[in-house]
Image (tube, rainbow, N blue to C red):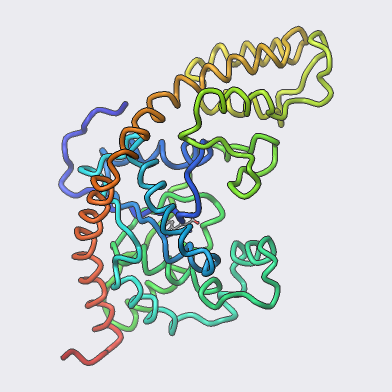
Length: 340
Ligand code: TRP
């Protein structure tokens, strides 16, 4: 755990977010949540629960999105995100972001949006073909509103979000050019140093594939999912040499086992032959149970205090309203709208 560093004169502003499409899983923990817990000591951090962005491809499932807002906030609090140090805000509770989006939409062309490689891949993945919701094509613009609405300069994201940062900076440059001065700061991505955690079956971890381990999973579920993990199909007998690369159990041990020397030794034994999958999986199940037991417990406690959790989100959103409204005013002026 990082110790509280002496407050520097001015902390850098971080904005990050998640679409509330389901409870968060171990992949989120390794890829972002763990970092956020550390960053809250050194940065001015806001986490946005991006419910409007979730609606861009879930318009017919608004109830799910609404219910998942609370799930995601529970996950944040359970892993140690502290509302006193991190602002947790609800996107739909910040109308300034929606207004910024409307202004930014005029600064971006449709063909520019259609070229976004992440959006392209998502459109293919979801089978939208020609029926892409306009809001979906435009969500990167709304994301630019999220980032600039907080004057964030640092955005911790995965590689797939780099096109969003690039687009944001194009919009920032246009607004500043229009204003003739720096109204908005440029931002940069903070890429996680940990490799993306694979799904339990070796494919990309995703809620819809059901191949991810939820943070609130009970002990029996952890054991069951670990036992079903993909290892090395060529490693049939304990004495056979096994492959470590592409082996999901090792990917998880690398991500979560604090004893890295022991993991290296297991890899050597596994490669040589003589280490069975059962023993290996037992170790991983123990490691994960140690990590997740306190998270699960805290999550259950908080889930029983629904109103308190909502109050945390209400307070964070209220705090976020100040800065986002100021930014909106500045961009309205830059655009030259009439002030009444
Ligand atoms: N697009 C992000 C995701 O799918 C969520 C998100 C919304 C976000 N607004 C953001 C991320 C602003 C970083 C900054 O996970």
